[in-house]
Length: 144
Image (cartoon, rainbow, N blue to C red; front, side, top):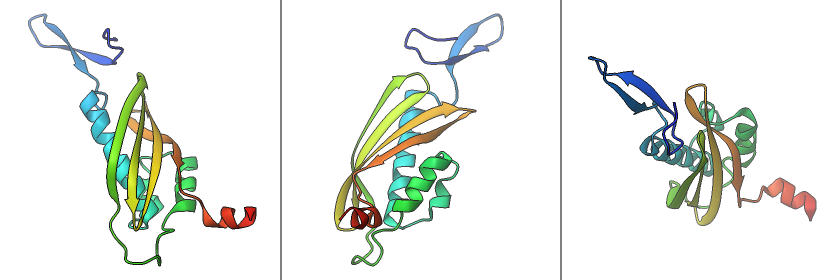
């Protein structure tokens, strides 16, 4: 069943013939915002080298994990290791079952932007696209 807002809902019988619409678990606006924030923080931690890319396995698709692994931990050895910090975020839901979120992150002494597309399927939200302003040094050197 779909409400007029386009949100997917489960129909629950409250007894005595009463029927009410209940947002499907993980699909309410608050759930999406909470999950998007947790995925952004996880991505920031991986990019900063604070945790291994494998920690993101349940929240990102395999190709996104590979991209994340290529960029992970590039800040190690570049001065004191500061925990990553989310400076600003945004979130939009362009369609039911899809969310796009982005953030400005402080990673060490650098600031960078990341954008994620999350999609809902098989009972959970997963990151299916990751874009970042970070330049992978090996690729940068090859181009020079």
